[in-house]
Image (tube, rainbow, N blue to C red; front, side):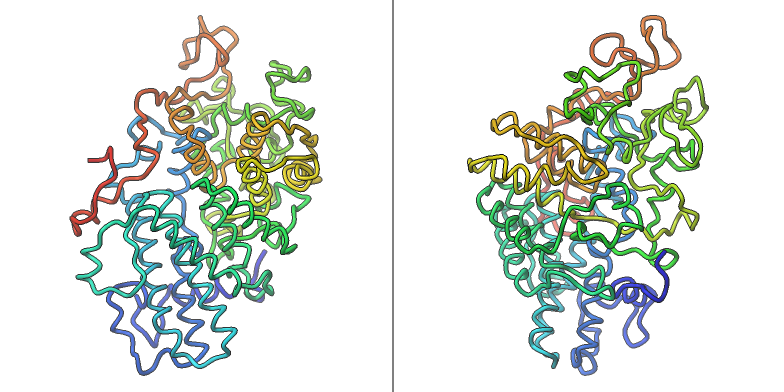
Amino acid sequence: MKTAKNISFFAVLSLILSVGLTGCQPDWLDEQPLSELSEASFWNTESDAILALTGVYNGSNVGNNSYNNELLIMASATDDSGYKNGAVGVIYSGYLVPGDVQVVQAIWQRAYRTIFKANYFLENIERVEMDAARKEALIAEVRFLRAYEYFYLSVLYGGVPLITKVLSIEEANNQRRNALEEIVDFTVAELTAAAPNLPASRPENEKGRILKAAALAVKGRLLMIHERWAEAAETYKEIIDLEAHSIDPRYKALFEEAGENSSEIILATNCVAGLYGNAQNQLVYHPDFYGGYQEDNAFQGLIDAFLMTDGLPIEESPNYDPENPYDNRDPRLYASIFLPEYTVFRGKKYLAHPDLTNSGIASLIGATGYGWKKYVTEDYTGDQLSSGDDIILIRYAEVLLSYLESKLENGDAIDQALLDKTINQVRGRAEVNMPPVTETDRDKLREIVRRERRVEFCLERLIRYMDIRRWGIFMEVMNRQFYGMKLTDDPDNYTDFSVEKTGKYRGHYKVINKTGSITPAMALLPIPQYEIDINPNLEQNPGYN
């Protein structure tokens, strides 16, 4: 467990900032306008610059350790998982509305607070007397943090106001939305400019600060979303050529405190138990059977995406046994999901069938029998609401799979050497050890890569959310009935809970039926109504008026 002796730069200074600085107003760098800061006493030394840098990190999408409702709701806006009390029209089930303050308004305001702080930093940093190279590195960090907010905003809302200087309240409240293309071009340019001045690695006492690969990886994400495949491939190749990151032989431990120093992790929010802790991993998502809140529950479709150990889907493998559906599966399934009447955790078999327990499906309409296991640590004994588990935002595995996908979609040659350098490194980590991919047919390989992304990054922040939208399958995968575990072999005579009567999921628990309630407009979030009320120049996204 992290202690005060090895707390990171980011965690310590974020704590200082969060409790207020004696030399400045408590909300310094958090509000506009910023004229209250003493111009005569600040922006003089490198220490001032570091303190201001910390103000930009604090509360940003990189520095935010309080993401409970956001992760829950965004996960429910995919085909992988759903809210424990889910229903059509419920915000926690992914039905976002303009008046929502927990996600729609919270993300918007967090992003623009960070952007305003970044702009203030960039307008004043040249006044500080310090080593020129170190100053350029600080500027690069702040340009990244600002660009990351614009990346996030563009993915969720589309075009948004592009603000690159400190504004007065009047100016801020009269902004209009820029075209999405302008946001994308600006963000790509900022990330491109920042990358050369960021280090490939950092010492332990700078853990949590931005790396060169992070700037390139976010740039790659954005280029892929907008199908700029050749540029994306070149960007990911830059990361690979850095040789600063590698695939960890472990999988489950990556998402626990034990794995947070892995070279596979490119970008993460640094959390410190009891000080700047993670309030979700050890309590919020795992099953109530083990004392968790069970806020989100994996759907059957995600479970079915995990291959058999022979590398074949369950529909094709001769080793698949419907009576023992969890035997001989990709080891990432066991690391990521609590499986009903199968997983043994803390010496106790996980029970989910309502005939066997009063928890889960028996008491929660959105339960599926499948719990989130990826983030909970089996031997954890600390404060469940303040663990030291870092929040991973980007891993090297994403770089390798994205590089392959970009090459594939760009029409580049695909050979075994490329597969071995990318997808087979991910599948071949010691703890996973799935059979290597040898398929080079483009259409077949595309489906393999997409399945691999779903499995490798299951339940991780924003990845599936982005993928189903950029692949153009949002309506196909979301506008449907979702299922949980199988409850009976005799659905025609089973009356305890609603189950499917026919087809592939015959006998499975019917969780939430989103058929007819999902529209193409829901691929984007609405603009917060609060912001429109203040600034009528902001146009609402289609479908939310």
